[in-house]
Image (cartoon, rainbow, N blue to C red):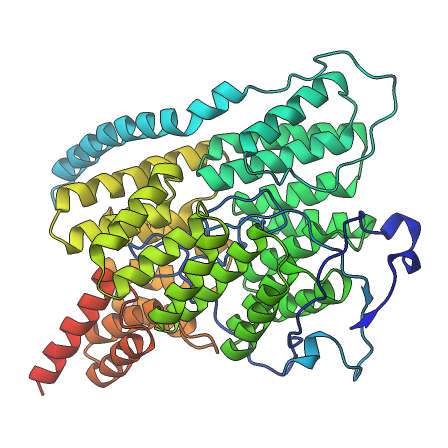
Length: 562
C-alpha cells in the first residue's frame, strides 16, 4: 500500500483523528485466483456440534468467525467474548493509505413414537427452561438495571448544535461506568448525535461481552436517536451495521455498512462490518476483496485480524499466522496484545498445536488477565492437552461472567466426558435459556439452536433451525450444521452433500471432518469414513471432548471390522 496523508482525502471522508500508532503489519492481499475457502475452523458455536467469538463455542461443529457480531478489537470497548465470540480494544490509528495500483507493492504484499409422551416431555422441558431463563435473565440484567437508561429529553438541552461526534465507543476498563458517563452527558446534551451513536455501540459491546441480548433494543433506540438528530451520519450507520451483525442479520449489516461507507469511505467500523457480513453470508471472494480495500484505507488491528481470517478461510494458514504475528509485534495497548495473542492461540489450537496455543494465551492473559476469549481458548487447549480440571476451572470462570452458548456447551461436554451428566444437563438447559432471551432481543439464534440441539437437545428442533439458517445464508458453517442435524435425524443420504460442501474448500476444520466421517460411516462408505475421521484427528486430536472420543471409537471399530 502507498502511504498518504489523511489530508489528501476529501474533507467529508477523513477518518477521525487518533494518536499515532505502529505501522501496519504486512499481510498478503487476498487474490482472486485462490480457491475460496470454506468457513472458519475456529468453531465458534456451542460445543454440541459447534465450536470465538459469539465467544468461542464448542468445537464439535461450526460457528461464525471471530468478528461475526460486528465487533473487533478496536470496534468496541475492551472485554469479550465468536460466535462468538469477542475481543475488545480502543480506537486504532487510522491507516493513511491509498489503494495500490495493480502490480504495485503494498504493505500486505511485503510478507511473503409416542406423540403424546413426546409432547408431554416437551412441556416438562419447557417448564424447566422457563426457570432457567428466569435465572439467567436475572443474572444478565441486574447490572443493567443498576446502570439505568437515558430517557429521551432528560436533562437540560444545550443550546442547539450537536456536539462534536465521539470517534467510537468507550474503551475503558469498566464499560458500565463508561455507559453511565455517556448517559449523564446525554442528559445535559440530548442533541449530541455522536454521543447517541457512541452509546448505542457501547450497548452492543456490553451485550456482546456479557452475553446479554436484552441490551440490543436499547442499542437500537440510541442509534435511531442519533440518526433522527443527524440523518445519514456514518457513525450511527456503522453502529447499526454492528448491531445487525450482533443479531446475526448479516444482510442488514451489509446494507448499513455500505450506507456508512457511502458517507465516509474511511469509517473503520463500517469497513470491518462489511468484511464480517460478507464472510457470514458465504460470499468469500467478495470478503477477500473487502479485506483488501479495508487494508488499503484503514490498516490497523481490527482490519489485520479480519485480513488474517479471510486468508485462513482461503486455506492460507501460513499467511494468516504471519499477519497476526506482525500485528502482535505492533500492538500498542494491552487490549490489542490480548486480542491478537488470543487469535494466534486459536489458530495454533485449531491446527492441533496446543503447546503454542497455550503460550499465546499466556501472553494474552498477562496483558489482560480478564480477557474472556483468552481464558476460554486456554480452557479448550487445556482440555485438548488432557488437563480436564484446568479446563473446567477456566470455563466456569468464563460462564460466570458471560453465559454464552459456546462456553456453556463446552463446559457441559467436559462435565459429560467426566461422567457428571447432571451438571452437563444444567449447562445445556442454560443454552436453551440464552437462546430464548436472544430471540426476545431480536437475535437470529438458529445456528446456535441447530448446533446445540443436534447433540444435546431435540432432533426436530435442530433440523428446523438448521434449515431456517440455510435458507438465510449459505456458508460452510450452515452447511455443516444442516448436515449434522440431518444425520442426527437419520437422514444421512440428504446430509452427505452438505457435509461435502462444508469440507470442500481450502479451509480444514476437524469438527467438519468428523461430521462428514460419521455421515459416511452411517451410509456404509467405510473407506471414506476412515479417511475423514483420521484426518479430523490428525488435524486436531483434541478438537472436542465428545467428538474426538466418538471419532476414535469409530476408527477402532472400523479397523477391528477389517
